[in-house]
Amino acid sequence: MRLEMYSPCDVCGNKCENDMSFHKWQEDRSSWLQYSLCNKHLPKSPRVFIWMHNLRVGRAVASFLGLGIGLGGCYKCGTPWDCIRSHSTRYNPGSACFPLCEPCWQELTPTDRLPFYLKLLSHWDATPERYCEVIQAVLEGK
Image (tube, rainbow, N blue to C red; front, side):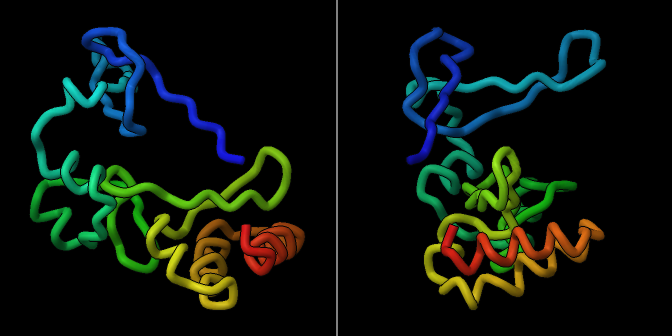
């Protein structure tokens, strides 16, 4: 069961029909604010088009379009996280990781996914216990 929680539209207050999030600076520029927009108020931009069509454009194309600069992305296709949905793999209650986007996760078997999770764990400098938890979750298809 997947929990869907969408914020109301920042412009009109209606329920959002999409799962995109946007960020803007607070007025004092001390931190970022996250906000949502309903389909009626979504900008006509490359990022919205890529997200709505779940396209894997990779790092080079996204960077050329000015998207995802300084952000992580899918370990397989390279598409930045602000352009595509990640697949969250829960490995214990309250903990999840997401080295793959949803389309890449869908097309791979659990065994084929494992190297991408191991690469993420090596970047985390994870404990042996964490390795075991994640490997088990991946092989169970979570």
